[in-house]
Length: 277
Length: 346
Image (tube, rainbow over the protein chains, first blue to last red):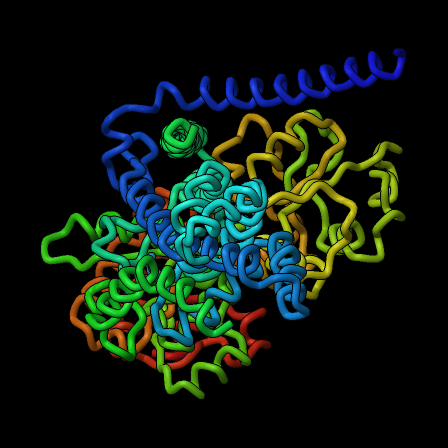
């Protein structure tokens, strides 16, 4: 089968290329930033002096914002997906909602920033706070959560639902006790993807008024804040070479945060998966 | 259908309610009018001024009895938008406030004190191997950078007869940057009007790398960036063909930026402090601290400091809470030096 072999060769080639590019990027960041990475860097406030600058407020800001993002996107996204998949049932309105959600997933993130600025920052009067930032990123993450949750719900076999009904369970009992637990691994995967996108976002947060310099840690959800990508962006745009090292170290921290978040989600997913089987 | 919806509603209430409660509780502690906590001094605006404000904020944070300061860089225009809505106490600006921004502030009854804090200079740079372009006139630069030049002026020999018949590779600021606005306004004559066929970047390091690796390159950037990369680039003298502010080509340096002869590529930078915010003692203290330290700090982050005489006049402006802008008359802006403008208002 010449076609098979061709496809296989091309697939391997493409995979190798992307891996090489990724490795090169990681190596470059690592060699620039590794020497700069120490405890003081993680626990210091930003500074105009590259050697004493740290990313403590940015780490805390990113964590706070992600927490708010998950609090918004998770219940709303799963709820919307359950409705569309289990209750909505193909009506005209449901189809309209479906098309809109699919479109929303492709909207540029800056648009969400403008929406967040108009609604959360100004109309709701939340100001340029962690709450506004988290809610804005929550909107951004919502379509991804909904789409992946729906995919996960679809993989639950009809026979599981019918068996539950046959035993006298109500629709809600069936969803809560059978469908959602079976779909949980898939839902978590979607959540990982959505949160990974949210943690790297800069544009919508700058739009709503996240800050570039902040010399105190967030005191609550109404506090002004900065996040890791904005701190990195700030450092990258400075002319001094020492700040480029800071930026590389900041990127490593962002990567570690992202990977550990994903690791937790994967562990959770496997645990649920095993519990079901 | 109504009955079947109930469980979903319950799911929402179970999971989303804590979030909403947390949100409303957090909101309840804030005064309704202000969007940031009262103690925070919020600054936003020009990314050019940002390094100075950042440095001042950092040192202010170390003084006794200071208030927390936040600094953003959403651009001079973005900063004034927030400033004229009363969302921030201080607006960083790389140009004087515009007429439409004045109107917006007036409508919202936001009065302000305009404080020049440093000078910025732009540098036109070429590769160190470039032996021919020691100086250029503003007219030549305009010919090279105007939108009409796109695709037509592509060789050094087209800029001035006798220069090499080689393709000229252009590097310039990204269209979102204050440097781009400033360069196009000063050279082409209208802000944001530029040819598009050049390598543009918000990151001046990329421009430095581009010009330093290409014998036939020409680029422009902040003088601060040149100072950081002196060995890799060569400065081009600028001749505005107006003997009133220095005859012939002026070689860029901090001195000529300050004495006003390096026209049109040098400009004053400002902070605008809201008069309402100045009623807060911590903002008053911060503004005084800013003026007391901008001389050393602006130099440290790569700008040109005001002269002592100018700084004294600016301090007097703050003490007197002199309202309004010195730049209402745009004709005066182009002919008068900052010292003359400051004296005019004293």
